[in-house]
Length: 217
Image (cartoon, rainbow, N blue to C red; front, side, top):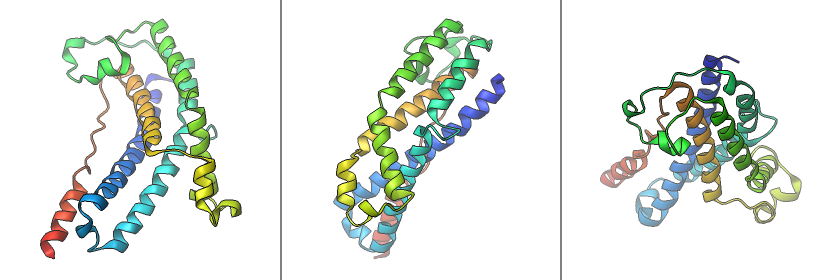
């Protein structure tokens, strides 16, 4: 694969990461609002309940895309592809002082280096970290397969059993998405010197909506 083809692939994967992260952020915002802004939520309980269910389904479906070995755009396949092609690609080393984003150091732990041995080692570390998520990924996929994407008769009438058999917390989901984001960002910075923007444009939407509901009532 060429440099441009890898950049195109990483940007496509990052779109999935950003979507899943946005779903999780809004879902958690609604959960927090159920504690401190319950009056406003109760002006439209059916709407917010339906949105929460749809967001939860989206979180599991999109996150599983990133960690299912069958998916063409999974992080595992992307790391294997990167291991094969990235060390062969010559990249220009930019002036580190001109890169204002602090995430460069976050992505690599030190200033960018174009040496192929460096990127090989970085990919190896990512692959080891990915393998460390094995249990979380298994539980994620089982919940997706047995409930969010399909109907497993063993669990449909007893969801508590499903969640007990294959537990995964929202913090663990966020860990998976943070890792996927760091891989996308690290490769993007290595190839271009440009950091991916992961700021959520919708982070304040719920608060504004609840304010409007409060004023209308």
